[in-house]
Length: 422
Image (cartoon, rainbow, N blue to C red; front, side, top):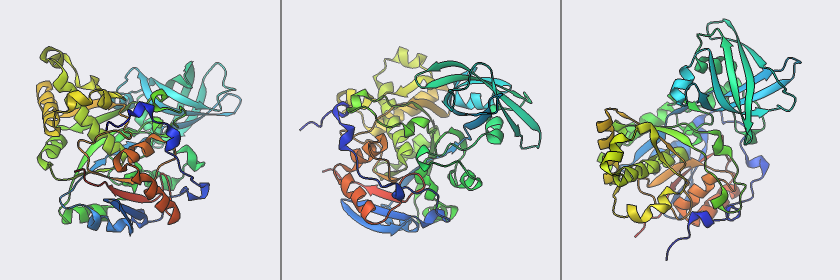
């Protein structure tokens, strides 16, 4: 029997009662002190996160998202003294590349969410801050175009030689999830980053990784588990509620990914042993890799030769529209296609983007299990969990609610190992 297309799913079928008091407002003092719900082949047990190495499948490869959250929330002042909040979402000019945009000096344009902007008329708002070297600095922001709930904002700053990354580091705030209902604190500057965060660009943390400590990572290595890193810069769209009744009417947000050729070779050499994603963003990146490879294999050679890595992308419905064509393409073939492509392009880094929506009906190609927190009702992240576990997702969330698990970004963790399909 053919599974229904995810376009026709109703988000109202993926909800559960989440009392506000079950949302963790602060991190625990010890990252590894959280609970760990283990769902293995349909059986649920309660553990501590410190026991994770003992619960993993033998020979597993764990893939982490090493993105680093930027201080993308700027609190500027109108000439009359009122505050305007600017949440930097994505660069527009002079660079759309996130890496280049963060290196830009003197001026730039970003798409932003604007808070308390009703009284912001013509003219700039300003932000005074102090650089890491103790210099006084000033940022001016001017709204240029308003569209689709966001605005294009022109930024200028002095000293002009500062890169925009330093402007954000010195003058910005961490963009905590809106459901926490509080501003960031000095503790969040440490705890809302993973201990392995490396590449700046996210506006939300890959929260499954917040539980890992250097000690647990060392224990994983001692126990013989392999690890690898990908980069997906988590966008504000991760908090975007699904407002449409049917998923066909919900547009998935685009997020950039970077993956090294070394990681692709590691995945290829590890098969068929299990691959576990640490977090939904790592999972989406891994599954995106398969579909990028399929896309390359579907292109005729002249088109393939002319394609640039930065242009590679996976669309929201691509896996469901290409399922028949991909039936004969193995994960090994897809990964090899990506490696061949990088070699032809003379680069060791795959740059691409993804809008992949993983929902019930999706067939997983590279991922065998997931380490993740507990997600909001009626969210695309919950759809992903339901795609992995099937109807068992309800039992997992019912169990977590009944056994005092803490929910959402600063909440507890789970290890989800679905039943092997015969």
